[in-house]
Length: 459
Length: 179
Image (cartoon, each protein chain N blue to C red):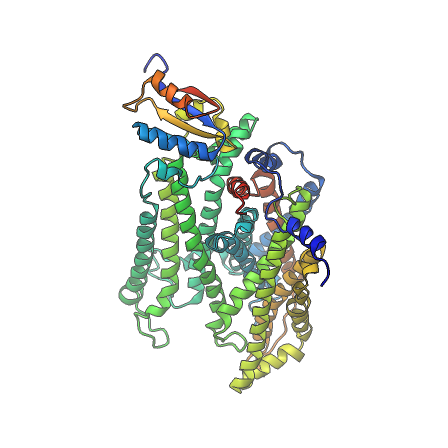
């Protein structure tokens, strides 16, 4: 055995959830100063400019789509669902990791969630906002989107309750509302801190209004804690249900490659997989640009990487089960679908998915990789890409060749498909950058409690 | 309108959460009842020390959840069975398993809305101003200081005696808060 001293001390210092030497005051100041006093970092300006340009592209692409119709995309029969649905599933999935971090890890009393839950929740809201736009953009007659909502109307019509698309609008809109409430509620005490520390009159008024008059009275805290815990308890099954409903959009149909009972757990695992990848993609530059390495430590990155590894293995298992079940069923169409994915016209995408989602992430078994921010960043990008391609594969390869060879076809994206995808990324980034500039990206009140626990030797 | 600024209470400022909890317990033992304790984070045991029992948020959330779920289930049943019966692939009109997803989502939504707005309303928020914000240094209540306020409307409140009592609790300082 090698002498363990050097490595253990390094690891112990690195794997704390909070750097040493912080007090209530210094931790509040450091986080609120990012918003209140620190000059804008050049990295933020550069990122914001780029994202603004991409957001404008998104606006142009969506406007042209509304003007001209979905014909500007590559979709047609038989592939009537393509990029928009792929983007939808991908963005919803990214949102799920945020809720998982803030709600599920809260219920499990994982103290390491404290410094990452706020921006993870913001990631959820912005990702779900992007996701929610996609089906509406795809509607063809988007101004009638509210027909999915039950309301008394002069047409005397009701939604078809047995349709997963109706379940979808209930699931997604509930998810958006609950995510926003959960995020805003956590923000209230921090907005009060900003109100009390702001020097400009405008800042005082705006943060003061947003803080709703929070005083930090003991009874207020008590009700706040109860409500926060309840919201976490509600959000946890909600996340599972939302992606289950998303997967049912596919699984309820009888198309080979969609019609499978493994879809709900398979999709939930995939959602968390890509979501945790996105959490890494965001947190690694965030902590570098704003100097937050004491709050988002190697321990956080290590833990996120471990969860990614587990989700990745579940996803890999689902891939294997799909192949196994197709051949076990001896169903001609299921077998043809699996073979078509592997050697058909879209085979390259299948094998890239396997490489990106199954093979490359296995390097996360190595502690060296999990403790190396650059390597993790690279892996997170690979998984993000891989998970987008996986959804593309599930949607397109299942549709383009179904039962009748005479109705087979191909799908090729147009420039407008790409503009919507890349534009949605830019819009997401644009919203996120505004968030980190104007709101505390780490929960100060929870960090103060973490300081207390650190002093008491619990954290 | 009252002419002279009335006294809202006396406020003592502390450096540590432990001292605040102890001060609250002593003030309760002394017979003070109109106490408010302010902290920059949720301090364990503080609301219990104030004699605060059940907070009522959970009950509201339960009611909200039941209301959300039951109403949307009823809506589905009414629209699919009574108002607009459609034979969809030979399934029964009251095909309850298909009604579960919307019911579940609305249960969660109802409970979450009730928890959020219940918390705000029970806390008396939103509120534009409060006398406690007149206290000097109170901006630190959201940063690193802990405060105990004994309201002037307390039956046992006497300016000199209460001040002496608070001074005894080892605070940083004791000040008067105007209404």
